[in-house]
Length: 119
Image 1 (tube, helix red, strand yellow):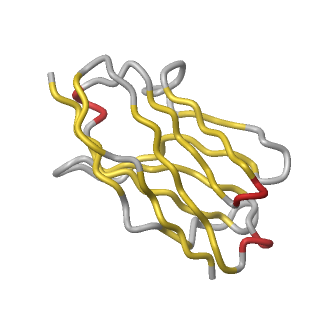
Image 2: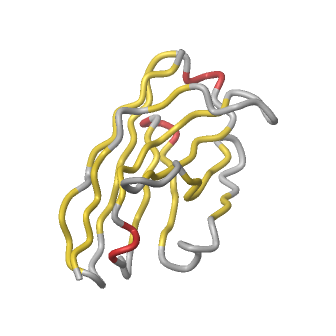
């Protein structure tokens, strides 16, 4: 099992920036992909971005493409989400998650960090 702890959320005005961090511990050697998801009030959890632990390859949801950047420092077992040009619709609880093999569900999740963007 992998333990994940997110940090960096907060309140920001529209157009501003935040950087989220996710620190992993435990069975991190089995990590294949790490990703960020978010869940807004009354909505289902949605995918935001992912990064391959071995290659560094990234993939983004259309809604954040060009504004958000996911990165990792493998030696620190940490993944970051740099969020620029934030919009009120980005308001949500942001979660990081680990996928241990291709094609299997993300099975380790953090507790989430709140991001609130005011208009």
